[in-house]
Image (tube, rainbow over all chains, first blue to last red; front, side, top):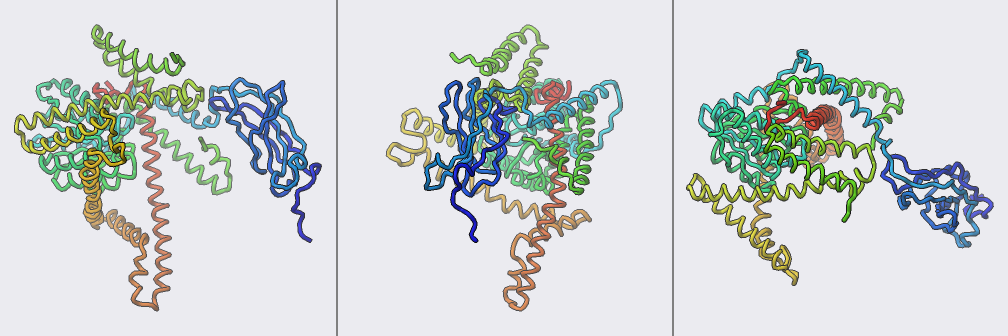
Length: 373
Length: 266
């Protein structure tokens, strides 16, 4: 016998249960969250119709229709401070019969009003992790300040900075520093500008010529200030020239062409490619390699790292870029922050191994703990 | 006048406070370095707070967070003017002193003034920068299409040749690590193209075996990319993310000052 496919009479459509309407938690307001349990045995084509009214009047206005199985709806058309009542009922809209004749009994919610919230609960895990990391960082800095010896592994790329600048000084050629092509809102650029400060101090000390071509205007302004300050700090303002830090162009490949041409024409003895690079990374590094310069590169993003590793003498990989200022200056406060970074990395490794074990055992709740929006 | 809290707070934090700091800096030199640190603190703390606090004055469409991004664009616009002035200064100096390569500066400045002039004229005259009212292209667009875009494409195309020369150097089997790299590289390259099918094409009897082997090679390629390569990339990404977070906190707290020209941690 063929299954029954025609719409059942109204009495056969039961009402959704456990219907609740509340302010959507953790949002910026103007939204309510409706949840319910679908009625059992809904016929094919049945949907849940949601309507709302502003009490005391009960003029119901359609809000949405939701397919069975979702059991949740966010009304983002709600206005903060306005009290609403919501109604939900099962209907079968795609029938030739009159809609009212096949709508199930409605369920009406308690009055609800949306409002702004002070905390996004979906990000609780991220918030806890951030607070813990800050605490570990501050404790590590306090320990470093108290004179505790902190070991940092040797980073070859940073040790080679002085060697590269020394070589440039000996053979009387310039040091070319390329701070990436991103602006100062990119943390890799900020890290690069911190390293530039150290490089500029070294060139000022040794009397080597420095050239810093820029693609981004904000990076240009910061780099100029940093280089000027470095020469002043080293007591060599006489060696500083405005054209040391220069602006080239805002276009990626025009910048690449200009800097590559500068490499070929002027043959710098040392080239630093530190910051955020995209497709131009290999063009610049390979051109620099062809000129015979010592090349030190640094990038945290793994997409361009293989190109630098293949073409440069030294490469600061990932976190090494951010460790540079601590490593170079050996300031206790900065070293303390590096210790915190290592502790956090250790925690991440332990949590990762725990995740592998628990997930392999079929315990999915552990992975869910780290889900964030 | 719209006096939303977010709007007013941004003006106070990033305009009035820095101006007051600069003014006070003339009388108290130590304050000169503190001003940028305050700006960095607020500029860093607002996006972090906006992640966790969904209040409209902070994270809404017209809240402090999106306004901060708008301010960045405005500041970058002014900085671009500084950059253009620098290009003109450097170019004219090189030409005036007949420094090595000065003819390049003539080409650069000619390009800057002609292209920039045509673009500005199109905007001022109301004819449009790229398209005239009759739908035809402006001289600015002609220059962009016929000079700028082909040159840009040429530089980008060089990447293929540089990639080949860099791969040649990287894949030389000098030691164990380089040999592993070479073998993995060859396997991945072979697995991404129908190499075995191509080689077996003239020999029909071995074509089914070649197709099966090619499929196996494809799976091996995927394994190399997903497992050892993916694991190494994840390691770098996690380390870099923690490094970036640590650096961001150092910047916000004013511990890291190297980017301000004050030396690391001074």
